[in-house]
Length: 359
Image (cartoon, rainbow, N blue to C red):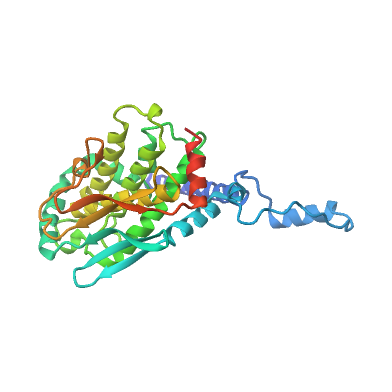
């Protein structure tokens, strides 16, 4: 085929793909605008249709009044709206204390009319980051094997947990909505901690890292992907009834979370230390959300990460989850059950109950 024809064919294909992408975007927007029906009229069409059928004013009627403060109203709102209400309820009870002398941050949970320290993160030293950067360099050997996963997980990780379970939008819509809430809260908490700890990315320590994908502009530690993945894994562990689980499901959930975290190291974006911190924070976020949902005794297990002296310690699932329970790893990650019980939120409880009913 002549070059000009090949070029025209390529342009035609690109134009078709662009048109299809635009149509898909419009269809998605239409679905969101109509609450899921996907059928929306144009403003001009709706105006002329009204003019043709409305007739003279007939007076109004009074619909039944919605009950104020009733959380049954949540099912009437679009999913993004009720999720924002739940996020506001959760993050409104979390504050942060900055330890400027030790480059640390403490997560504080408001519960029982008091403020409780439920998690701490301390930044590794420059020497620790230098040692960790050498590990990141070595992980680049796995890029050929992991690249498709890395690309898939740039925008989210839920699909990689859904493969372990019958989680499809048609069958488990409320479960997926709960996981979306978990992921959003985890991302918000992680970003707040990233800001305070202000850790440089691996490519700042060596030109040999050469990230496989675009390097995010925010700080490295804690890893947002690790925080979100472990929060999702722990939420699913609590949510799914024992009778539905295969014997190794819980382990697979946390091994999947760890693999997602490690993929970010393979890509050159994160140190293993970031994954340790993210795993600890992810467990904490899951505890807070489950507690606010009224699950069990609502106890929040304190999660602490201390990167000072982490040196060449690498991250593995078994270093935070082993023998079907959370695992402390030296002074790097420590879990300790305390007496802090989260205050229940009727909004968060609604999300949990709706998801639980699908199982």
